[in-house]
Amino acid sequence: MATTLTDDLRRIVFKPTRGKGTLSSTKTRESIPKSKGSAAEAGEDKAASTSSSEGGIASPLIEQEDMREYHTEQAITSSDGIFVIVYAPIKKAYFKDSNRLEVVVEYTDEVRPPPEEA
Image (cartoon, rainbow, N blue to C red; front, side, top):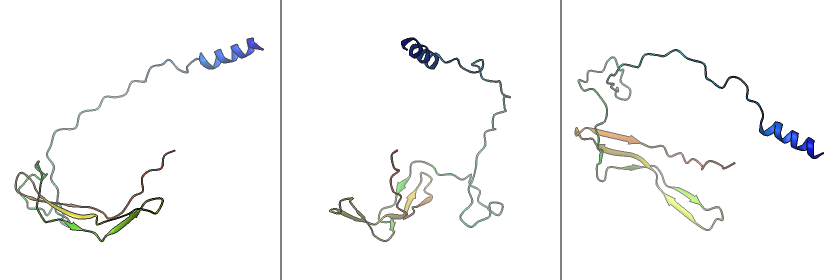
């Protein structure tokens, strides 16, 4: 019995691998050429855009004081029901980039539960 058990373990541990162990060669592709992009305003057709700027946000962003907008208040209750945290999620935050252009960041009020661990 010990011999068969040992032989079975060797077959499992020293199982031969399939194939030759090398990857097949693939065709090499050309790199994507470097270019600059631009973005159209919300609701504006990109072809109809007459902006002469090249688009993009220039770092750093500086938040404008007292310019935040908030969603309605929400409450989170602890699993034991003892603690309740009431807060108002940020709806919009207003920034100025280094070119002094306004940047608006909009947030959703959707609360997503943390992912469950397996």
